[in-house]
Length: 76
Image (tube, rainbow, N blue to C red; front, side):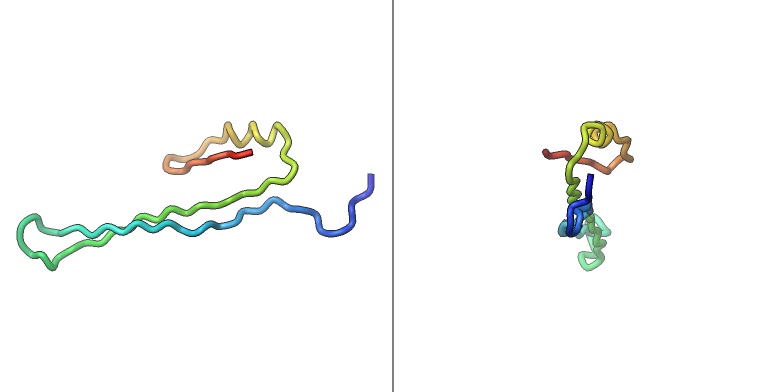
């Protein structure tokens, strides 16, 4: 079997825009309106294209052990 000419398609991870949610809360419950804390939560997303996936690859991705707070969504 010969290799086709030209560049081979590769699997890659493309970063999507980071979703940033900002929260501002008062430090005090009653007085000191000017004293505030600011927090932000960032959600980083990646799009991974897998060309020519094999059934074992799909089953391995579905049974992948991920830490808490990390999710995976598989679309075919």
